[in-house]
Length: 184
Image (cartoon, rainbow, N blue to C red):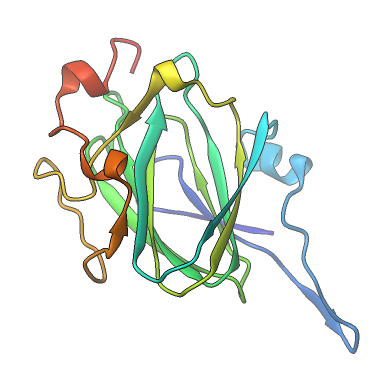
């Protein structure tokens, strides 16, 4: 696996090194030893699977507050997504900054999203399938979200989303007292 740093501190693009022959392709998508060698979280509490049937579906920005901040590893298993990260760690050199990666099923690339970094994704193809590892279990009382077009941040999307949940559409404008804690 190849680990390439993104512009958000602690975030990485992970590129598998496929083995191909007449039978097809084999990819190793996760290796605890390699993640540890790079200094990344290597233990996960939950694996999620998401299917979005329509191109233009937007999910996010989602994250959890401490002590259940989540590190996520996202892998596109079908279709394509535009995955956008937002650094919400007050002590981070990239606080408030965003970066985006496009994940495609055919490349099996992944994105490592460290705790304290919210993320959202927009599907670029119908029937997009994501598999993601989560370092902490879902805790609804610590869940937070930021609207995909919040004026406090400079989000750039490839096109306007066509499907957004009521919950994701109705997040309030960014307010540090609600979105961040003193532990950030």
